[in-house]
Length: 240
Image 1 (cartoon, rainbow, N blue to C red):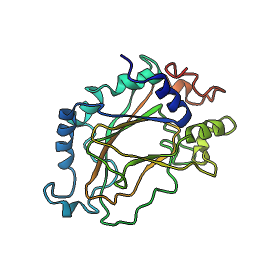
Image 2: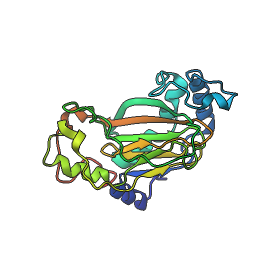
Image 3: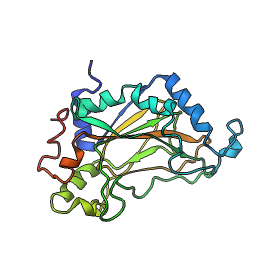
């Protein structure tokens, strides 16, 4: 049975992302959370210590088996290849554990802009194909949810037809579309095109937003990374 409907794929093609729920068994998530708490500078049983806690960035637990199992023992790779093409992908990075800590504030707004992974430094490219962001705990509105700018993958693809990908930091033009904050229960997963502008929203909730970000790339990425075909879905057999 397929993971994505025709409507899902059409939505992904137009917007650059698609959301699926309950994608990983809860026992895998709970084992990963136990590992994550070992790397947070806060008391798991005292929510007052979670406010503006740390460390920020990627926690140093990507290579722990119970974290890697979120990607390798769940369906995410098969789901990704349903979009891109069977047998076409390899892991670019195992799950990065990304925390958005509560700020203790109530003044919430969506971020004004985000970024494109792999193109944040002019003259440097570290590209991939598909990003996978998964909530490890229940994430509600205004609580640090993963945020995307729908359609910006199309904007970037158009830009790269006339500009070098070495200058991808300038790929987005104004006005930007309205961003969308993605929230939902543990296991809520966003599959997103690597050209997507994305970020995380401010966390005005009471819990630490726990999520992982994995990236997959074509097996022949280094052979085709500088290609900018007229049809941006040329290598996406699942979309075409």
